[in-house]
Image: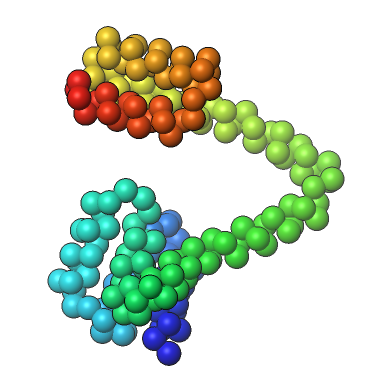
Length: 175
């Protein structure tokens, strides 16, 4: 029964928490602290602080930790699955609808229309990253990192994860 409770404690906030992990935190707190009594408010706030300190989505980290604390490894898996299940279900449904109408002219026009908007959004984001890098690291460091990234990614075709790791290492040593 504990696994079912873990599932419900994270699935319900996943469905009702419009806006992602941060929006569902109060709902998770209600389930974990008030409904099931697995933690006190202080313990929950410590788990929240720990989850915020680590990279990645907050909801899945909290679900894994709380699920593990209540049900071991299986509890962690159930909690993480329950957190991503609402998005997974909706994506499967949307994919089925898209596959059903993929040959429709309206769908084709819709996807063609969305592409430029996505390109602009990515360009704006890249420009904002460039500006914040310029302000934080200086012009010389920014130009050096942009040129090295271009060289490694485009010319030498090195995997982006290695380029990111190299940039982190460079920043840790020289900045």
